Image (cartoon, rainbow over all chains, first blue to last red; front, side):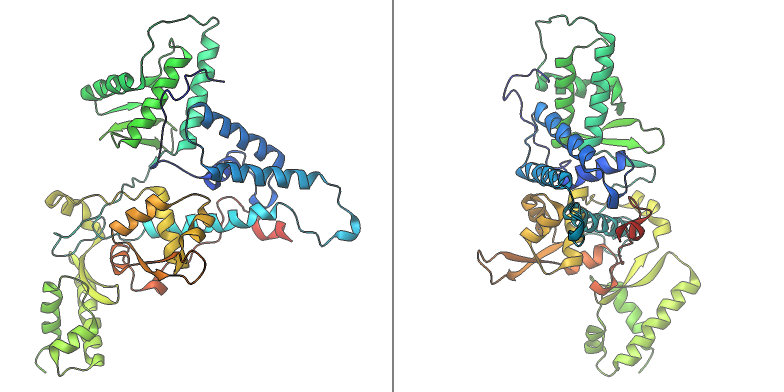
Length: 241
Length: 180
């Protein structure tokens, strides 16, 4: 897929790291499926494709992702088995994934309710605010971007690039992730924010795009930048912290 | 007793954490719980009628004077609160612990489908979560629960005060119909 030197740069993304459940939710939403009527074949195929992507950009795929992949594959194969009419009490094999999904979504909604309360140190304050004060980043119209949205954006950029370039010109001087981070920081020194697409000029080659993407992930990990997406325009914007 | 309401109000102003009725009772010596409760209710409704800059909140088992959320932007010009920066995974983990406590780590990870050792450590450091002890099963895993600090930060009276999670509507409009 993407030709990269092994171990060139390993990205660990603890903070924006999301698990296999999040990936499932992301895919189900993306295809506007009902969680009680999931197309296992499509979801499994897409799920595995995402794992490939994550591998390609050297993200350490945790065992959890593999486990979920095997669960999905197992369900898919069980769905292919013919159903005998006398065994009608056989439950839908998809329940194995639907039940945890249900619980997970419920929990996510609970998390949203919690964060919407009048938080101490954010919405409400006490008289002696010398103790640890708390604040949460939550701007109504802007959401923090997760890993999967970033991968989606990245895929789009790679597609655009292959459209624009018939032949791959071999360039000798490739930029390292470290250098690219420095370059991006330099951009930020002149302005506070930059859009995701601005960092990927049309005339760059794939390896440069990959390096830029890794640089962005690394900067997030180092808490150098904040990535947010406008819910209305879908524009992803990077803020220098 | 002379103006019990005013005494309690003065205590509330100085108290460093939510003031429990029992504590007020210890201080006032002669007042009964009922009397104190009434005074607190009266104070609270006075603040509501006045619609001033603060109100009385029942949090973490006690009472505390807090500023009204409407004026948060102004307060942030006065003080720069350190951001809590709870990432999405951290908030989710915290929610699991809040709703399912007491809970062991493997059960948390089962729901999220992801390892959460790092997040747990961070939540412990921020004193939003504490260890209750160890479960008497092989491996003797730690049992986790939320703290008083958690109740204070999230403006909760107690754990029963946690909002009831809404039915999942986000992904399924026809939820129960398709089930059976």
